[in-house]
Image (cartoon, rainbow, N blue to C red; front, side, top):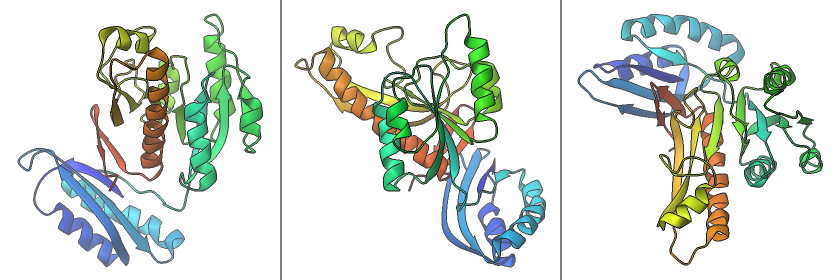
Length: 279
């Protein structure tokens, strides 16, 4: 259960008491307040419930009374129901491979419903994992039709779109259908160098750290709520190929973390910020 509401006394007590009265056993809880006096309050409960299929709908219906009292926005998720991913990729395979490896090892507890690409380069790789691969070319003239085909291909088969170095801008039409359910990996520690050849720009400026940022996609390019970031120190000895190699490693790790946290329902979005209860 994920909850966000204006902070005031009694929220944790009310929710805990409610869960107790409905036979739920709380196994983990995390909370955060932006400001105890008038700020927003965020909380995540993990709980077990006997006879989940029968009892959860009752609990959800009854919880409305608590939610109304505290002006809550709330959602419940079944931990046993794996999120279904549609992964978008272009020609670079490092982020895709990290997701596939973690999924295969059981470290990423999701279903990968499909991989969609504007190139056919990775068909053999993806299909070797037993995952459907869809090649949908994209050109400036066919972009609208390509996105229509992408959405048609996804249908109701995916809960989350992951842009694993997908080198096309996603249109507002797609974003509208997947609000806060499209995760992108940006090859920089945002805010960062804009335009082409970011690693060459970084090299020419003599940067001392490089990084990567995973964020939800919004209509503002690379301006969506940030989920995870990481950096690594570099020096004047690192040339552009070295920076790219280091950057790829950071990108793959940061994207996989962000996808994992989303899949485990650990992220709350408020305005353009995230609260991530990653333990």
